[in-house]
Structures are given as C-alpha cells and as structure tokens.
Length: 181
Image (tube, rainbow, N blue to C red):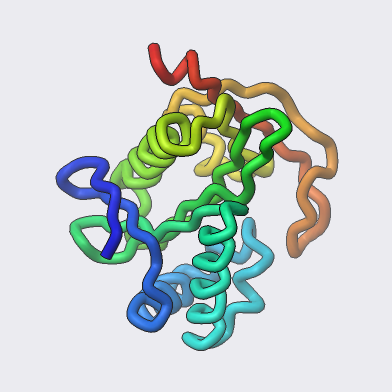
C-alpha cells in the first residue's frame, strides 16, 4: 500500500479498489445520514460495487494527473477520504475535498489530513494555492479549514446545489508562502 504518514495515528493511502471498497463503503454507509446533507454523491453510492468503481475511477484520474484521492487511515483503519478534486495549471492551484466517518469526528483527524495534503500539494505537485470550498452552514468543514490555517477569501452566493437546494459557499485558501512560515 502506498501511504503518506502524517503522524503516529494518521496517514493517507492511495486506494486499492478491490481491497478497500468494502471497508470504505461500510464506513460511508454508517455515516450516510450525516454525509448526504453536504455530499450529493452519497445517495448514488448504494453498493460495494459502486464504491469499487469510484475508487477505480479515482485511480485513473490520478494516473492522468487530473486529481488525487486518498483514503484517510486512523490507526491503520479507514476513517474517510480526502482528495485534490482538481488541479488547475492556469494558476497552479488545487482544491481539496474530504469526508470523515461519523465515528471518527472529534479526534483532530481531518485537520491533520488537510495538513498532509498541503504538504503533498506544495512540495510534490508544486501548487501555489490550495482551496477548500464549504457551504457556509457546514460548520465542521469550515472549522477544519480555519484550524488548518486557511484564509477565508469570501462567500459565493448559491455556490453549491445540495439535496435541500442552493447553499452559499465559503472559499478558503492557503498560499504556499503562508504554509512555509
């Protein structure tokens, strides 16, 4: 397994679709009620086969350099996922997306995972800016961005279409020179 160790508890691993799909699906399924509020794709992920296909697709996108998805491991067990949803060469930026299983909330895992992704983005991918987009009423996601040292650039009206309608979205950014300090 290809992993990036963040600390003694948290690491990021490239997915192994046939091996990891079942555990990741069950974690997502256990957390479905909370996750579907903020992540529209949750309702379309109904089986382990759906998850396996998703993980395979993310590896294909990793291979083309379009994105990078990893499984967050907490004490060597899947706790969620974090990814660079896209890279933009025009401004040398990347956007982070993430989710965490409900039973892992409150352990500081996501903050550490975001910090690890920043290291990978700034060092390995040589981006200049990393963004996090979060619905303004998604308190946990906004808290993660703030705790990871991101700057709130502003709010975009009707930025995300979620199950209950459009939500305004916060745009958080971290620049390489800020991260290096």
